[in-house]
Length: 107
Image (cartoon, rainbow, N blue to C red):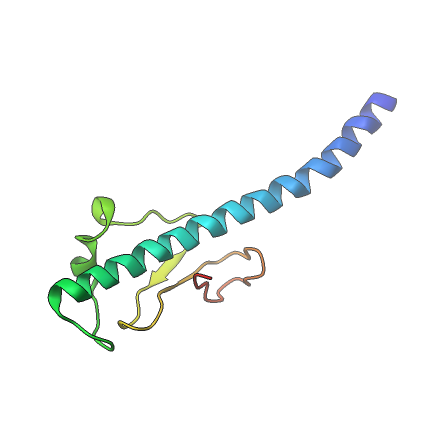
């Protein structure tokens, strides 16, 4: 009985920490993907002589990303926005301080 109680106590401590660390790693992956998108937008703008307010398109940006794409971390979708406006991601689940469906922008 004591062994079962100790195992239950350890599980009660470990499970929330595991869930929190998973959220932190998913947010880090999303922030990294946003950084890659912004870098691709900047490279595309410089090479094509585009300026603030121009619209980048996915086929054009794919050539500036490793593998031509980004891998979603938590089923999120990315919006590229115009040049000069940051890209953002939306997800269907709550991650950290970001509610489900709220835009996640790079810090």
